[in-house]
Length: 577
Image 1: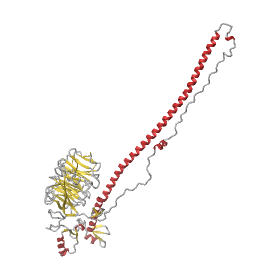
Image 2: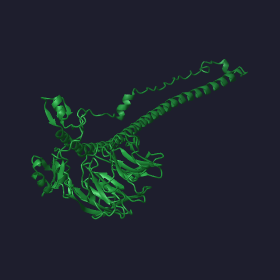
Image 3: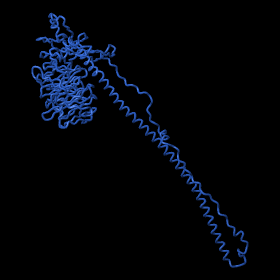
Image 4: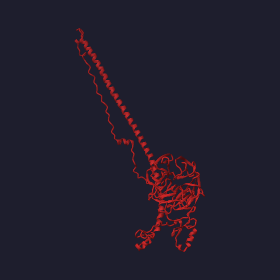
């Protein structure tokens, strides 16, 4: 993890410089034997020297990576540079003679260089294929979740409609039964009333008959006395009318169960069909070189995918520029995968535009001259709120939600990890600064404040932050006048403080090759570093393009966007080829 001791002349160039002393030409070749970058002329002169006759000089991209220097513990004057294939241990030349005579050996530097390139290849494949493909599948799953909810809502609606239909049928059947019961009651009631009337008439007949008999008993004459005559007819009493008791209707309850009702309502089941596997696009990256894919169109309009190797161009070429409306200057730029970017000035104005500079929306924040906003992997804006010591997100460009509270720490800078979606936040309190890592739900999972020597990593102003392809966390610390880089577990790797004079770092970003790009307001340039902090070039200078670089970001097409600290202009550069 230490910076390799390769001295590169400090000049304002836009390319990799030749390693020969006082030579300022573009580096195109590399001597694997002495690990020196060479221009074409120096390569020819290098071969002329007798002791360099057998040196292996190759194009720069095919170079063998220099093996880190490590002394042998048993022989401190010797470097470890071989590996014993029999014992599988790294050894020096003295170990080879003393302990491993007759064994088979291999050059450790060749193995290191091969594996180094293989690691770069794996990192590239992860960033170019595995992560994007996985994110695409995650998006498909989210769409399936929405489709499932809509589908189940339809099923629930159908269940309720079926239940309403059955309910109506039940109510109709109940109404018919009640009507039939009413008719039965009316029929039986009429019959009973008829019987009751018959007995009323019979009782009246009996009362009249009793009165007649009483009249007979009170008759005091003999002649024509009815009681002295035959009473057979008179005493004839009509029999009591016959009647019947009512036969009451009987209600027979329906024979049904819950399952019978369920059959009426229908059932919800999961088909036994085997679920189809999600399609995973094939990986077409086969080279051990970093190869992004670009599309070309044939004459008939069909698109062809063409693999091309990426390397630094000999110059950073300005390809276009655009104006960001609604801001006075451009101190920070965040770009998402959809081609939408956010830009901010030092007055808290935060504007969303497309890549042509057309304003889509604008919000007012408490942000200043810091990298206080980022775009999540889902394309949502996340920004720091200095005033309320919190971090907010804007979901689908509409709802502002607070999901991180930094308590007494003031958030200055923020970055979304492209590796796992974690949120990295540079925060400060009185005379102290640190970096906190939060997961996507806003839970703090890491705090970086001190190095392995218990020294404070940051000043109270870690005002820009980004992450490299290997997981390194890179911070522009304005007060320390340094770019401070730690690995993903928080171990200090290196600090870059500039070349001839100390830098005052502002905007910072990384690219697909692991380069670190940082704005320096002292020299008004953009410094280009490799992954290990080695200075490569001044990529953008005030003589060409942006006068005062402040904010930087690299878009999905590997173009560098540089924001001006004095105007609302952004210039886009092509520096990889």
